[in-house]
Amino acid sequence: MNIWQQLKKPIFALAPMEDVTDTVFRRIVTSCAAPDIMFTEFTSVDGMDSEGSVHVSHRLKFDNSEKPLIAQIWGTTPESYFNAAQELQKRNFDGIDINMGCPVPKIIKKGCCSALINDHTKAKEIIDATRSGAGKLTLSVKTRIGFKTIVTDEWIGFLLEQNLDALTIHGRTTKELSSVPNHWDEIGKAVALKNRIAPHTIILGNGDIMSREEGLEKIEQCGLDGVMIGRGIFSNPWIFDKTTAQTDLSSQKMLKLFLSHINLFDETWGTQKNFAILKKFIKMYVTGFDGAGKMRHELSQSSSIDNLKDKVEKLIY
Ligand SMILES: Cc1cc2nc3c(=O)[nH]c(=O)nc-3n(C[C@H](O)[C@H](O)[C@H](O)COP(=O)(O)O)c2cc1C
Image (cartoon, rainbow, N blue to C red):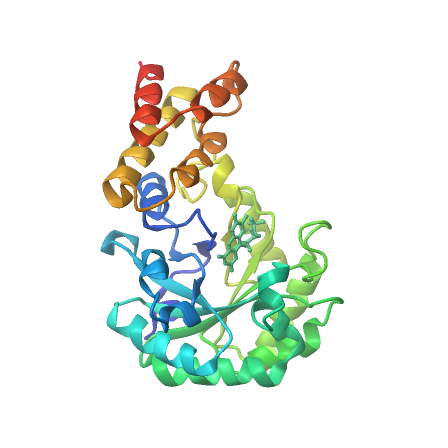
């Protein structure tokens, strides 16, 4: 049985997020309340297949405590997808996810990610090439409901014919970015298509879920196998906790968690990763209490990891 079939439903997944969900953040989230499954940041297959592959390999670093873990990939050349899939087998991931949802203009200009919504032939070539290289690893796709307009029937219907192990659907088009409410009704339609075309494909809904309760509601409302949560983790690192809906998010608890994050970042990356990436998390951990704004400002002036660590340590009592 593949990993998607082994997961107990309802499935709660942590979304792939560039410069956020690296091995360090995934371990921090796991230490609070583990999601059922996690994804790497999206990793370029063309980069993996080049002489500069060391520049993307940090994205594929993981610790076994993060499993089950899916490697998310994107790129232009089917042959590179094949080679990347072979490499991901060796690295012992549980599955491979193809990004067909990223809306960033400089990426879709290359004809990949959400641009594939307009090019079924290329999308199929990529899926087939990845599958040929993936061996026993599962194959899934993360996508949107359209490019300029909503085309759930055509696009999701097409993907469901590709015998995928799992499919994650964000309920907006590429053009909509995050500017309109998530179209949960379209995700409901996708579930009806799945039940007809590919009942074995696991289907996750994604978009604006801010609590486990909200996730459960959407799963029930749309008939989903599960949901994927992205930005909701920033407001509550314990969002995947099944035991309690009321998490104590006191400033001291959040600062202690931030200190663990800083220490693990230092231990894992040292100066290999840009310190600015770590600073981006200040907003997540220092928020919602009197004086948080002033504290954020002071922490953001830190000149090094040690300096930031020192300042956070002084705030903990
Ligand atoms: C900072 C950031 C980075 C992201 N990077 C990726 C990525 O690498 N791959 C991907 O498929 N989606 C990426 N996304 C999209 C998320 O996976 C998710 O689909 C989106 O945030 C909507 O879900 P949410 O409303 O729960 O946040 C990113 C989103 C954010 C906010």
